[in-house]
Length: 243
Ligand SMILES: Nc1ncnc2c1ncn2[C@@H]1O[C@H](COP(=O)(O)OP(=O)(O)OP(=O)(O)O)[C@@H](O)[C@H]1O
Image (cartoon, rainbow, N blue to C red; front, top):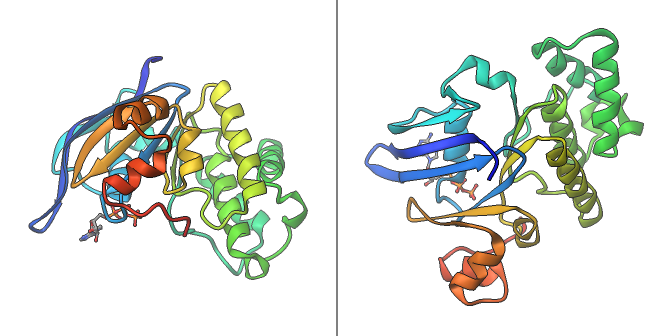
């Protein structure tokens, strides 16, 4: 593995008396695509929110690019796409991009170029001037992804990134992910989509609050003596659904 950009060490989290995550440790190397799997409600989003500094950590620690979370500096190098879109529906796509770009200090020619590029990546370049009321669910999802890429983040954290995106476009977005990682971007994502999980360099599987496996898709299948990741997922008690 290349040098670790994400280090999660002995992290635990409870809400009230409900323990969600227990002693989770993992590292993600620079340029890797790491996929976090686990049944619905197993704590994937909670872990992602802790990485973003949005949710507090009860014990243990998380560092990103050597910065201990929560860290304002770390946020500058992270592109984050939450599970639900945080977009301004009354504005056009361009206005949304300009707003979020300005939060990252992008302006002028650079901002214009980045907007063009990220909208091409998600195949929305011809829908820049529409207000988001005219966008479908999948288009909003793609715009959220474009926004997360605007400031050329070193680490992309994506919570179920391709929900609502059709298979053709999903394939093209995965092509873009692979290009980004070749350029040194690291991707940490959560997914319930098994063909997506197959494409990750490494997978972590959470069950009952614990990270029970952390390995390549191939090694995971060998370990469980199965042919598909779906079989593993079903064995640990989650339904592999595609929303
Ligand atoms: N702010 C909160 N207060 C109390 N409980 C919470 C809070 N946020 C999450 N939970 C609980 O923590 C558990 C883990 O939720 P989380 O959203 O992390 O799961 P998940 O693995 O991402 O699920 P899914 O695959 O359905 O998105 C759930 O039982 C959820 O109800």
